[in-house]
Length: 110
Image (tube, rainbow, N blue to C red; front, side, top):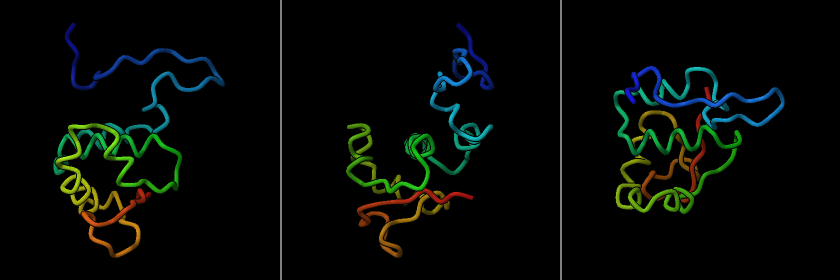
């Protein structure tokens, strides 16, 4: 089955009032696509960004939570967190902490 770049996933219909059939439906229209097309982010950074975007707003994300997402992510987690901070998507907690040393992160929302 061929898929075009604009049609990268199947979206099952959802009934009004039911939870979204696709977690990406929780995002503002086009936000997931903007993250996926971001030229300066690695694929691992894009995956972490999408994960945080589909979570409840305003929450704190811990380094341990990101490590549990994927065994493949652990060796590159520091560089991914630096990438997302440099891109202006994450802020380390506590403020001013280097991303590789911060125990937590907040998604910056604009």
